[in-house]
Image (cartoon, rainbow, N blue to C red; front, side, top):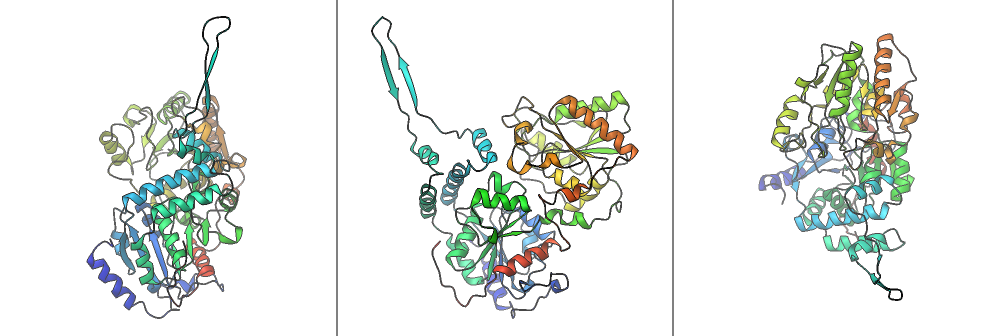
Amino acid sequence: MLGSAKREGGLRTLLGRAGPRGANSNGASATAPRSRHRPDGARTLVVLVSDLYVRNLLSTGSFRALDERQTFYVGSSKVADLTPLEAQPGFVGCVDVAAPRARIYAELRRFLLFALRRRSRTMRHKLDARGLRLRRWYVDRSFDRGAVKARVRLRLSVDWRRLIYKLAPLPGVKQAAVRGFLLAAGRNSELEDVIRRVRPDVVIAPSAGGEDLVFDAVRGARALGVPSIVPVMNWDNLSSKGAFPVHPDRLGVWGEQSVEHARRIHDIPAKSISVLGVPTFDHYFQYERGSRPSPQPFRYALFAGCFAAFDEETPLRWLDELIERHGLDLEVVYRPHPYRQDRERDDFVDDTTFRHVTLDPQVRDSYVGAYRARSKKIWQSGGPVFPPLDYYAPLLDNAAFVVCPLSTMIVEAAIFERRVIVPAWDDGIHPIPPSSVIDYEHFQGIEEIAGLEVCRTQDAFEEGFLRLSADAVHGGSHESMSAQIEYFLHHDEHPYRDRLAAAVGRIAAPRSGGRERGS
């Protein structure tokens, strides 16, 4: 249900004072691109399904170019901290996805990954890692002793669900199965009731590509004749886990690479795609280099940990010994990823056992405390930790260079012209180590970036570290990295909020009624 009776009443009040269309009360007209696609006066409903999206979009002002008086927000019941949402004048409450429907959607996502696996090597890798390989027909031969006697027995093991998955890429099978899943799941009457009452011109549902409530938002909007836009939040979503049982009217993506993934993997036409970039990195491009003091009193290389399962303690031990052996004027600051996959082997970093490695002080307490609370597997406890975004810029700006085993920190470091060493070897522990992750779709082309070095062995890793340490001291130069990542991450003279507003303006269609159509 919508959060509470108070929120129900708030919805009626907000709709009553929404005001005339056309006036923008938040001053966006001064900064938005001059375009016939301006969304002035368009009524929008924003669906935010997680704390991460609440932080990444609200704290960066991603919706400020929309008409504040005509912008409404609905959250998911999974959002733990509703404070930023409740502070929005247009907050109307939270909506649930019932557990039975969530289970059907989970099965639908697995089916779609199988259906798209031939188009994305990332999806194939992930399906294999999860043990979702399809069963195969096999022959069991049994021979009796003797010169003449012989017997062959055929055994067939049929898993009908997996057989359907195997047939998923065939013409017609995917479409029929998706229709069946959606029919079984039914529609979200709560969310559709919100859409009817708000009567938006556009529904905005930011996504990583597979959230239940985003599925419902796109389906509900289409059923009620409202166009939808789904801004994709992460670099790899379209090639790793993004799947759309119903296509939104418009997809917002990071850059030209994402456009190619949307077209090739998901059959989304180019005319339905807007290149938006990403809100969380937008402020990096306006950051004045050297404007804030270093978070550390010493010269350092930043080791930015990754989400994927990888033994990070071992390379840190190598670097600790390397710095000591060569007497380098350099320390390593280790920053674990905010929410890591479980490791097969404990790789907790106790920096008191290192001479030249220290934990990033911003995450120290969370990292140490959660390690003790979660059986020494992953460092988050009680929910993910989302550090303030304004900390990252001075952390990167003051780093001599960055060590990053395959995460978006590669892109962030490039924006700051910080060279990057990428560990990409098999750690001998995890089923999908960096030596496999480097082959993922979204990492294709990064080895061509001047200033980024992919290391597949310990020797190459240590040699690269020594070389960058010396180059940083003596002022080594290289081609601009921020210009080289344009293919992966778009940015222009306009902020993200204006690019999003322009995309909304392209599909906004003022509605005269609530006539429903099929989903």
